[in-house]
Image (tube, rainbow, N blue to C red; front, side, top):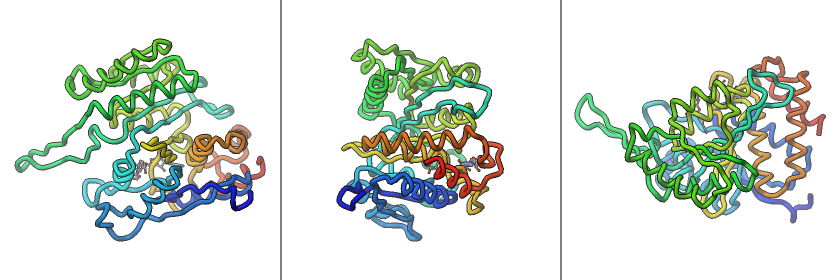
Length: 337
Ligand code: NAD
């Protein structure tokens, strides 16, 4: 593509396996001749006082300007340190919905052949509001914030998504029997939106029952919408149904039309730097970025090449029972392209 036709997209390679799988995406985009010019931003080594995290203001501005981007995983130390980079991104860019498709991959056998689910996770509040403090010694408190505005916004997105993609059913996942006020408000908002979509079946499922049903028969579900923490957990559970975290993509939808795609998985420190990571999840995330840009022919080509490579079985990474390195798997996809 000529330079004037290039679309600028922000790229955060991220931590751990992030740079290795981002490299794979860059190579494949080149071979597929995608009209994308990456604007790369690296996580810094100093806290930026303007964002209170290692994420600089310039990185945020890049996404705000380009309105589209791809993000690698970002590590957060457990139980101490700075504000999570992921939380900063979500808050600052108002990335209110995280869409996580999860479907059985043809040619890769798991216990289930018929998984075809979309989890839509509220991304800005709930238990992830970052409001924790010590009340007195030995007693700590964490605030779960649920607002009408954020709940309506994510519910609207879930129904809009269901309709736009020809889906039949939206299930709101909750624990309103115990968290009557917070999850109760979330459900109330979902019900209000559901009334505007009589053509879509709406149901409410308690989270513990939802876990049992998903493991027993995932075909029972279609689109699931839920508060932040439940979405985090359920989407990993769904990844397990189809072969693991190396396979599941996601896309963060933000206000003002921002789309920041990312894999569901984290920085995988146990395999980082060893050329062992499966780039599929980030690749399929980049495919959703291309679809957002209406570059469907490029998206289809890359998705087909990735799925064919996995189905063929000759080159698979360790998480899928194979022996290939990230580089070998990437080359095999390029050959299919
Ligand atoms: P993780 O997702 O990084 O890893 C869980 C397991 O899955 C590990 O065994 C890992 O090797 C495997 N795995 C993950 N992605 C893989 C891939 N592409 N190919 C092959 N195997 C893969 O979860 P974790 O270990 O709990 O978290 C590590 C770090 O990542 C933490 O600092 C956490 O905060 C961060 N994290 C970031 C994000 C994000 O940026 N969106 C999401 C989750 C976790």
